[in-house]
Length: 120
Image (cartoon, rainbow, N blue to C red; front, side, top):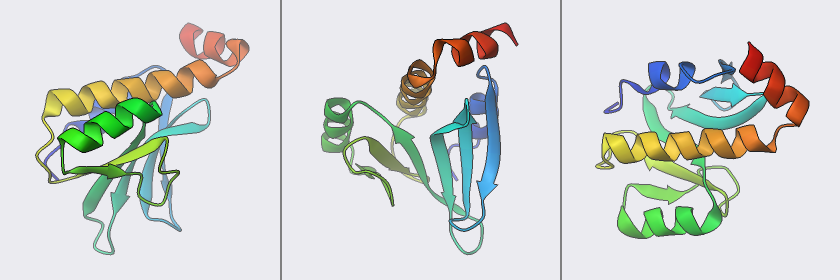
């Protein structure tokens, strides 16, 4: 996978935990028990997609600019997007997209849950 930094980058964010969704073979990154990103693994445990959530118009825009960004793999195609793990999306853009995904999910949490995460 081209984006070797992704695990440490996501785990640095407040309240993030990761787990393995065994049935799908996805490494999921969650905040407040809600997934905001996933690394999709093939049968050899090699990453092939990084899936994340964006505002629909923003996702559409990025998909029109980069052939390595597609509608969410096995996800809602309006809100979720998948980036090829060995694709040509610049690191800084992927970081921005991951940050936006985290923010979208964090802002959907209850204020109580947000406060718990921020105070931890």
